[in-house]
Image 1: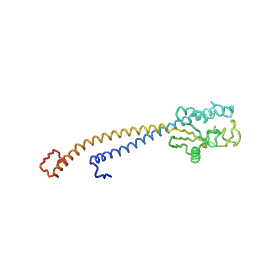
Image 2: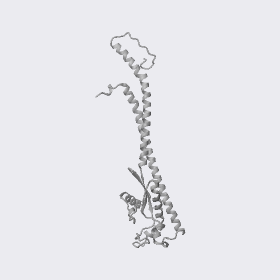
Image 3: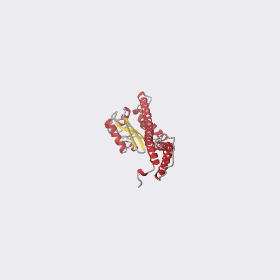
Amino acid sequence: MRKIKDISIRWKILFAVAVGPLVVASILAGLRVNDIRKGAEAAIVEKSQAVVFMAESVREEMARKLESGLIPPLDKLPADHVVKAVPVITAINVAQTNAQESGYTFRVPKNQPRNPKNAPDLVERGVLDEMSATGVDEKIIYEPNQIRYFKAVRLSSECLYCHGDPKGTTDPTGGIREGWREGEVHGAFEIISSLDAAHAQVTAAQWNVTLLVATCLAVILTAVWQLVKVNLLRPMETANGLIGRIAQGDLTHAHTSDRQDEFGR
């Protein structure tokens, strides 16, 4: 194996010159790509929050209409119209309608759901238990290919019409009242957003940064090579030739130089 001391000095110099910019560029590139990744994820979270804000606004508006009498009280409505007038159901329908067009999946996982579609998976159940136990209203879970945003849904007074007391009795929709209390958390709005677009953005950034680093490094090495060649290698070769003649006993060769550096002296 060739020892480092035996490698040509030109390659040693080029290596030494290349390592510094390459290390700095790699660090800066990593930071830049990481910023892009975080920015893409933050944008997804902001969009999820906006969707939930819209759903909650619809829920609040429907609740105000019920309270003001613009919508008849739930106990005055036909049984088949009750669900449609419940504010949270209206909010869910609005968010669900916009889900496909806006590129997200909308779910409403619940404890003891009446609709089997709202049965929570293991992750959702853990989030609901945490929200119930700690009172936290918001939870974000980052998975390899998606972001899951949760916002707690607290029971309001109109929810108790079907879910309150007397516990065990049949409500107008045919369900069984659970005896829940206002303010309790038994469900959450969940926005599931794919990270495919974010991954594509990060990949594109990685290629752009790699190309930029490679171009800058090539320019630096080319400039350094010319400086080394003119100011180091050529004088070294000239000095080497002169020393070779001296080694062979030729002391007649005269060498002149207008350089004032170490080689010139």
